[in-house]
Image (cartoon, rainbow, N blue to C red; front, side, top):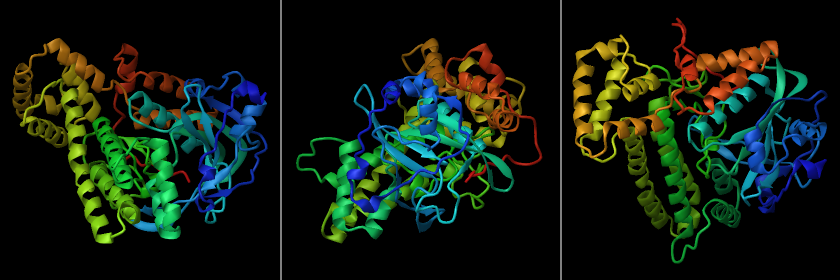
Length: 486
């Protein structure tokens, strides 16, 4: 059966110094049941879809059995959590190893919610069904939107209850990622490891994610530059679709540039840079409008960790790192402007474009307009009777926009086609996600989730069927809140 499934592990992470992980024993559950299987991910990994539904595979997904070639470990790392530095690690996750795909790509296969580890800090290491399903839904939506992300291969229920504020059904998600190397991994190495152990980690990250002939370049400065590029691009993509991560701690920021750790994440409806959904972000540190700056703050923490490798003289190392870090704001704005121009059907560049874009956003905030649907209305020229579209300020802006489009060579049809490709018809609206989670968790009904996943799989299709999922929630006196689910 193992051969039929198609596991093909090569576990390079365990060849790093042992300070970076702890070997694990499994914590089996009694009645695992497969409730979601991602056939697209399975195929890309070279796994057999039918075999993955059998008892052998379900036992792997539940943390009851190690797949052939797997070596279960928990990774050690640190992190700034809401600005405060802590020793962390995989407190409720394990890494089986790295699956080598038919295309010779390497992906971590990890379980989340699989039980206690040496880094659990008093927790039970388990996870509730709702948050595991949320990770599956949102990560798949992000992938379909074209945003780098970890993905979910499967979700199993454990047949056991866990206790948070209430009794909840337990579950485990199988996460697939290019790696789980984090900014916090390097912070851990710099704080508790030797310079040699830090160098081993940095060399590993370069080989795994940024293989290159560096020539006379400073390879560790190059590592910092590459991560800056990845994060500037990633966070710009978040902003362009209204995604709010919720916990941009340094342990939740990957070296690969993938979105990871979907806890209290959500998508913004009404445009407001101050939007916060996470129940634990009481000061708004990780609000939508703060995400770009927090990205820069986190990258500075990575630079600090790499200083001993960048140059033996600390002052020189600091200056070199600062020079590279200064590239981040420029790279972010370049990525964001490029995406915003596309959302408005603009092909070329003019100096006044940023002012045009920011004027629209200010109007959206002033009139409490829906972020996603405003761009859809512009794409198709279909405006409702909302206060934004009826305002004289918007009508003035609209004429400026039309004049801007007229100053480029491309036709109106070409502009609309560009806008269709960059303005999603659907996002995982918070009320739709909650509806799907409630049906699954409270009633064991996965039809709502499966239908939602199908709609979200082609966000740029702009079909009639998607219009139902573009509708806004009913007005509510209480703001929407999300929770970590730990």
